[in-house]
Length: 390
Image 1 (cartoon, helix red, strand yellow):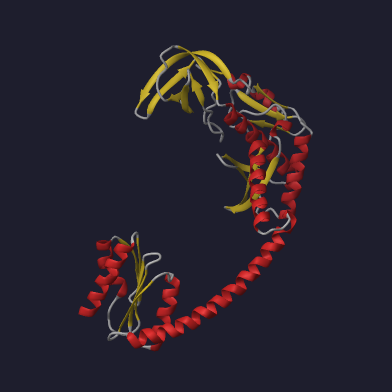
Image 2 (cartoon, rainbow, N blue to C red):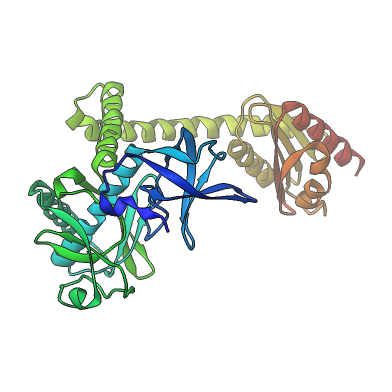
């Protein structure tokens, strides 16, 4: 049985040990070590990574024993192990932060934690609340960070059932043997097998990111320690870029964006008016130049939406079939404005694959996109010919 060094100390980074077993499986090579500080996937905490004799550790799992998946088997039976400390310490910060956050959430909001997820980018807890207003979220964030600043001691130890029964545990334990308690001094006692920092000060800070409703409860997103610092730095980079772009002080950026949005709305209204005037002129010209009931035209840079708007104007004025193509984004639009019985969507469905196009539509309107202008152009001319022969 592997000795679990991470229970002796979560701060062990390097150690020497012996390989006791090698397993060759379909998904790779696995090692069993006499001693290991590599924490396996367990209790919602991801596993540790690192190196065994400079060979990367790809995964750590628990079956009947702790298995270390490696790129290849080491040549030696006596090996040197190195933990990916940045990953381990990040998990320690997030996991200890979750314990503290859950405890203060119960105290401040009266909400029990139902589940915990530690992801690569953020962590979450689901709490037994229907909602969590912004003012309570701010109160919770201040309260939990106050306990970080107090640098309360965090200890872990094993107890038996009788000893566990005397402790004010957060929730009922599921195990009866090897009961491990994580205690935050003056805050809580919690049954947990994960790795933790030695004091709340090492959590650094906890930043609450957002809340969302989840199956009648609230899911709270947060980051601790270096993750929270990186989140702050990323936000500052964005704010600084906006400040430069809008030529405004950081505290004035929101006002400047609001003003810019108003300017954009005004410009869009003016642009729409010009487009409508141009479409009216273009519709008149296309109707005059049509061949029978078919109106066909290739645009240099008209968007699909603009082509649809123009087609709508044309079908309001005449019983026509409209075929448009845009060279800019390789789009083809077919609209049937009368009662000819020609089904646009069925035609596209039947022939698009021959030209590597994707799209579809109804009897009255169909649209398609193509990867290249050559394919779009070929389909456009095929459609023209088909309509003329119909």
